Image (spheres, rainbow over the protein chains, first blue to last red):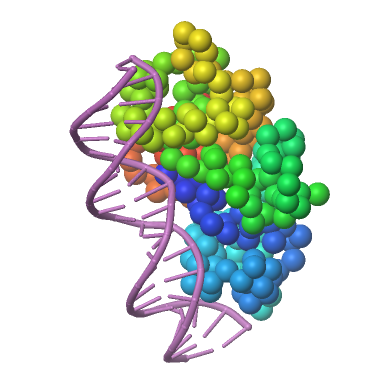
Length: 109
Length: 109
DNA sequence: CAGTATCCTGGACGATACTG
DNA sequence: CAGTATCGTCCAGGATACTG
């Protein structure tokens, strides 16, 4: 297992996506943005992402992407692009146009 | 759920990776290359990937990537690049140098 | 060989209650 | 508010036996 073991887990990409702005985000705020993921799971993800050096806990401003994390987001872009086209080709056209890359990911716009 | 629901599943990326050459590959051959994944699961993955239009079953030559599948592999490259550097930075240096992107993925060289 | 049908188990996730 | 501890459920995946 490797990268997908990390990013494939529920909420992992969503968390990254929520932090994409570069602004720090508090635990509760993050939780609210993630459709109320349970605190235990959110905490798991945060710990894993921190251990991976993708995000870091700021002193007083919550969590934010590390430089490494920013580069990860960048590396993800082509894939998201592909996913969007693919969603258009493949997916069922009903439901509000969702998030190609991940169900819980609002996806880059 | 979307793309990660597909690629995050066990063996999914590995199958794509095994088909990267563009050569068709038979069921049993694929199974052998994938450390003897169970036939039921392999079949599941193949069906899902076919449904997604990423691979296709050739008449007599097994499975192969579709053009769309080829583009997916391309979109995956930056991510794999990131994963490799990341593995070097983060990962435990023990064990045979594995596959950054996915445990079961030999990973591009 | 290609693919299907069952059964079983581990672990991811959700809910919740709790602590500092 | 931030995070931990516990518990129950559910399902993906592995094993295996089977069919065409």
